[in-house]
Length: 347
Length: 239
Image (cartoon, rainbow over all chains, first blue to last red; front, side, top):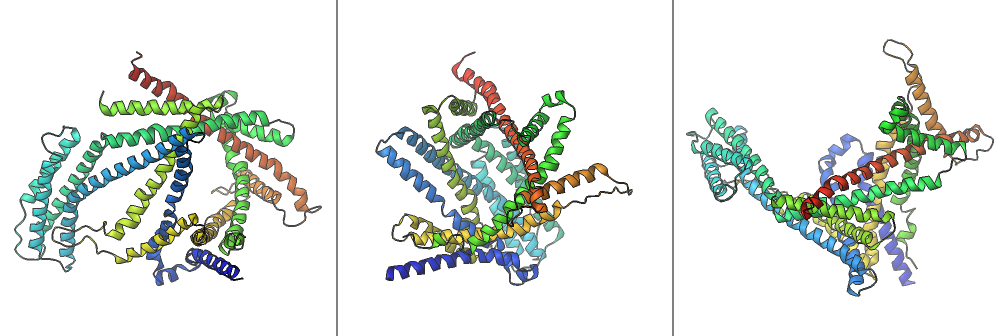
């Protein structure tokens, strides 16, 4: 009796959470725009939606765990087909490791790039703060800090990307030029006597921001060039472009052969309807290739008409029917009518 | 040839071998096909979670939560103030962790809470999607049956097309309408007319699908005959 009561309580909790899961999106849809803005939902819509996606994203490990446990046990106990499990697990772990390493590499490059971009962003911020008279440290102090920081970053760039040992390339030449341009700009800061932003200082800050931004773009292009030659990137390309993309395309192409072969075996023109179907398929196929134009010049136009008028209308009718059924299913699912067995106790 | 070029050649070599192995299924299911099939599944399964972490969890959830999107300027000021509200993302993340209770025999019902929550959200999104996307399509489907040009003339071709469109739509919808008994009614008599129209639609679909797949097949054959054979010749010095 007690066990049954606990199971019922659990089922009620599950149903309650199922209802709560839909309340936000349904309310957002029902409420008028003014009400959404008044209660501050509009500006919070993105973080709330991200929260919902985060819930689903946490399930990423489920598939991995299942695959590893199913194929890991087959491999460990040398069951039939263990070589295939080895292939699957090798592909799985090598992709995870290589993608993680590539990501780590790109995070490092982004951090380096950010240091240069700060020069541009900080110059713009100084100008904006001074114009808007926002509370900020004294202007002269900020300009000195900007000069000092930019010099430090340029020195670090000289030691790193622009060191004599690094191989030369057009992008590296552009990077050197951009670095020189920024160096020239920051070396001659306007004499700022007061705390108000004078036109020469504003111009100087704009020039520094522009030079910093250009250097950032040059560094980004140079980093991309460098990264494309690293072993990690090559391994990623091998796995992604060499295996994943190629095998995916091959699988889909294989289905093409099977569709054609199944059609050849299954389609028999016995009725008017099947003849109609075959004619429509032939018109669409022939109208797409140059052979079709040899049969008739009107075939491509006929194909276009067939797709745009009767096919589009019939497909829309199918979609509308499916959408109404989908709506009913969604309502039943949200209100736990459809999934009563899901929330109730199994035994 | 640079090391980058060699990697590229090996990449093409492996891709071509994999393509041939997949196509070998046309003859018979064989170990080579199964090997590459499993390799493909493994790579896809490894890539998926990494993309979720790299492209969503880190930039959208974790980086703002750790304040990684805030830059400290050289004078100590910040590019934007840190938003402690981002810490609230911990709640959905912890809630999402309930999925893993599915492995617990005793507490598997906790996983059902989060699955139910996700189902509820999907249901509400589908309701919103119906009214937001499908209703405009319904309204847009009923095109004017008589189309007049700007000068006031009768556009016979466009009018005929619209009549065929609306008639097809109504007849196909009617074909799928089983709610009331339709024997003897006009609706019942009109129902068989929907079938041939549906067949035309299915035929057009079939043709489009075959052509799309065949385009892929042609691309694969070109890849094997051009890129892959060239790579084999270069790598194995076959002239």
